[in-house]
Amino acid sequence: MDDDLLSRDYDGAPKRDNLFAWTVLILLLVGFAFASWIGSYYLFGHPENPKSYQILRKVKKIDPPKRFELTAAPAGKFHGPKELYDQYWAFSRLQFQSENEMLLRDYLRNFQETKKLVPYVVGRYTILQSYELTASDLFPSGVVAVAQSVDFPRVLIEQVFTAPAESVGQLKQMLSSGLDIKLERASDLSAIIHVEKLYDGKLLFTVVPLLYGSYTLNIGSGSFSLEPPNDLHLETGAPIVRAQKLETAFKAFASYRKKKGLPEKLAAPVSGVAAGAPTPSSPQLVRVEPAVTTPPPTPAPTPRIPLIAADSPTPKSGKVSPTPKGSALAKGSPGSSAKPTPALLARTTPELPPLFAAEKVVPIPTPIPADVTPVVPLATPAPGVKLEPFIAAAPAPGASSGSWRVYRPGQMPRGRLVEPGEATSLAENGVGGERIYLSGHFLVTASGATRGENRAVLRPSAGGKAAGTTRVIAEFPPGISPPMDGSNIARDELRPFQITDVRRGTDGQVNIYVREITATQ
Image (cartoon, rainbow, N blue to C red; front, top):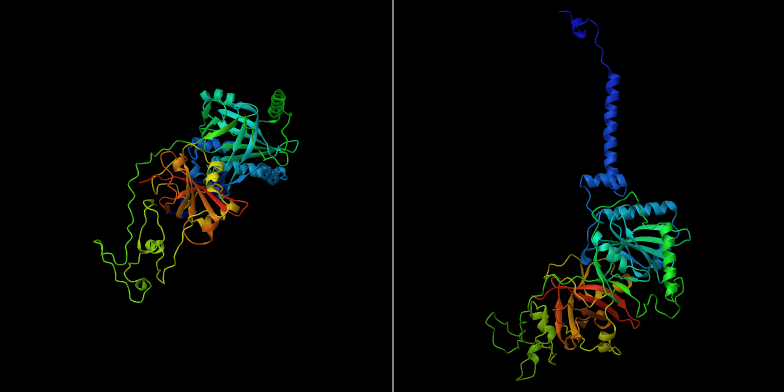
């Protein structure tokens, strides 16, 4: 057979391979795969883009904004109005664009993929005007309130209150001109999602409360609850209140102050007057703490800790090793039995109950073994400090008289556990959005149990520098009575206190404000 016939078609023409066409096709497929990879990376990496967000929502690859618990909120840093202005006023247009993209991106991802601290807003702000949110806004339902800082009027915020349509009327009625909004780091988590520089040099911050909690007025009636939005309209973007509405808000606020006989504009606090101090009759919007979800069970009787003397009979549970000759215990006075001191008792007792208030430990002046260092608890406050007036006149910053969530021992959210000596450094650095718990042994130096109050003042009973310079102000929820004066408390990783604030006084005293968050077993 002629081999040339194999290279011909049926019509007898020679067969040719089109290598150029195959090369072009392969290059197109490679380009398509590369474009798909780049597109997917951009799609998932930039959900703040409106088209990317719509696609991710359709394929269910991004969750809607969620409600955070105060004890499980993303780590962040709290900024006052002056600090915010100093940080952003010199930004260029490109810097604002990059910052706003990052802020919105972190919010859309529920702060799960960010390594930066979330910027939270604190301070006192006065509402200029509030507007109802519509389907054409970034948040489709609720009310946005434009407020101006009392301490630094060049800073404005638009606080977004997302709520169902049936609650909008109540929100609009309560969020009226002149209402004060006080944002505190101990109870509020208002995150910044956008920053805008206005034409007159002021800064406008779009703020969203991540707790989506319930609010009420300290004067008057009415309350409302917020709900996270199910969907967002990124096409309209932020800020929500634009130039024309913002000008209307300033005019409405000036008219309100004129009716009240006040100056038309807010001014910086007068020297000598506490910054942002509200007048007794001014209404203020406050957040309502949620009720205790886990009712504390009835506390079981606390077991008494027996004091075992040197010549007492051997307990049934085990044997007592004989006292070595020549030791300090063997050199006691004849005919008298040497009783162990509290330091020796703490060493021989392997585990102390969480709250041993059955009896007050009184040191006995007896010889102490050479290898034991006595620990003398501070049963009296520092000189010049009156604890009774302190409890009545200086409540814990940010602490409410209501309720908060109480957990079973060991079931609280994860956090950092510190001792009193380590907690003193927080007086300079602040608590921030981090969950920090306090452990250690404490002596109750003042208690409000006999006066119907829910607080107590504690002192670290262990030795060290922190024992004389640290004071713990503990607040207890309804249903859990504060420990009695003179009793001792031991807290570990299963039943710690939660730190809400740490402050250093003018006398150098470090005050650690804590909450009881575990139910008694």
